[in-house]
Image 1 (cartoon, helix red, strand yellow):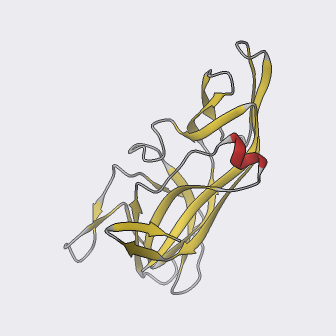
Image 2 (cartoon, rainbow, N blue to C red):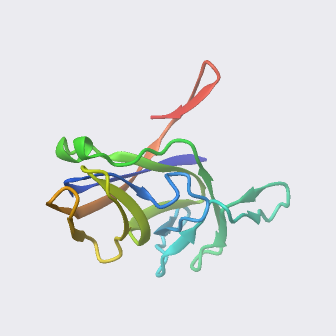
Length: 176
């Protein structure tokens, strides 16, 4: 079992707290990415969509995961379980410091997630407090904040998966 931390970064202009509409643990937010088989190295041709509120049984019938599928090349089954409670919105301060913000952690067995795709269903607020619902499927967002009398925007978005270790300390689980 390998844990992968999904982090995001982008250039934020007069905007902060970029996150999925329902927050970082939004049960209906679709995480879209490709998967690489850890057995044969095959990369899926299509993006996989994983949603926190959707679970399917593992083939052994003893547990569930958010994604269970077989590699099209070698036929080996893999699964992905989402681990909520680790995500934070991307803030203007993090953006300016070029620091990534953790969005979600995935417990992956047999697959490695690669190539996160931004989509519709994001929100952020301007520095004046105006809340925006944002579609990031085109890779950027630009608008004008009437209240703050300034342009707002998101550009140069990046998402990256990084293998991490699970740390259990004092009854609290973290990933580093």
